[in-house]
Length: 454
Ligand code: HEM
Image 1 (cartoon, protein in one colour):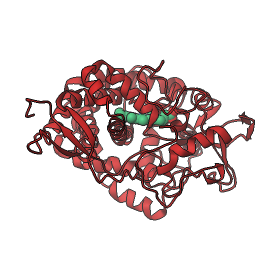
Image 2 (cartoon, helix red, strand yellow):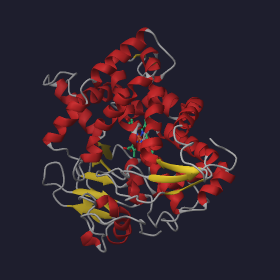
Image 3 (cartoon, protein in one colour):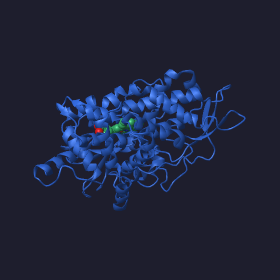
Image 4 (cartoon, helix red, strand yellow):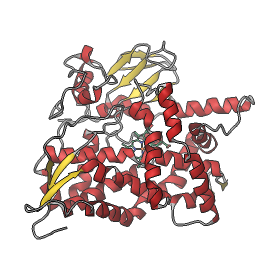
């Protein structure tokens, strides 16, 4: 598997053979990321993108070594998250009386909740522990039955398909990997089932930067930004309605809990605006990421033909499988979300204070200095969960708990209810644009266990 991505058709970008060919952000780059990473590890673990910074003059530094990425994400004081920088700028504008706290632009609404709830790293931690952990972190276990029901409901829709040989075909993304996290997050937040299509559309509008944004800074064109705003129409109003109704009449869901809680860290209740901000981030982070993990896992199962039977016989190995799969095919390949607060040096490369770092989780996960045979799927690997896919340190992904649970239950149910899974003919394996590792479509053939019609 080293450096190979089987069955990919070539796109406008040719496969890189040497450092000069490597471009992680150009059209079609997604098809060759895993051929670019061994070149980067060998020739440029710190890749300098000249003039790619926000001012058009400064450089962006792409980090692909596991050790460098770990160092950056674990030290938010020295390597400041862009979000903290934006919040500080917003606070300074407010202090100077130059801005109203609630700008109607959607991201400002979310940013404002970070400004009031998470201005320091201690409050960032408290936010996670008190507000999100009980629902989408370690406390996600409370959703086990709901997630199992959702997975089974989705499988029910296509498992009886096909005739004669006991199997059929499924478009795995549209019929399983995409709706599963949408339905689960809708349930966690407490949105009515009938609103899920709207939620899904808002979620995909929120992630537009990461799918349609250009270059290492994920910049949308003006036209795309207008489209995004149009697609988000109604979202703020919908959130306001949901929050008001759940404040009045709380149910057993995350939004209701947020409206009722006495937040110990600040010794007060949350404002409506703060609840909108938290939900905004749940919708932004909680839908597509897990979809990409599930679709990459389906592809690995097809590429390692004995694996599906192995997991069927040993369901206890599903958890190891999802961790190895997330290491090998990280959904969030990289983010340009850290700024150096002082002059730094990485691998002998000078990085001035104020530089944007693009932290390339997908590459760090296959760094040969961290992992033996890094491109090999190995369920016996030590410390399986120590990959960079959810980042690490105090700003690590708050939704890792629920995502891991969704993936584990999904494969436990699929391995129980199907006898085999393989690629159907005709897949192109073409990836969507942007910085997430997502396949556009994935058609799979499945069989059912003998004697089981469903
Ligand atoms: C396989 C699925 C997922 C992957 C690969 C993933 C990956 C990441 C990564 C790499 C970060 C950046 C952390 C940093 O800057 O150090 C992040 C942040 C975040 N993720 Fe996830 N994530 C996933 C699922 C989820 C889910 C299911 C949710 C919500 C339930 C979620 C919510 C968030 C939020 C809100 C943030 C921003 C940080 C914050 O506000 O505290 N993610 N995620």
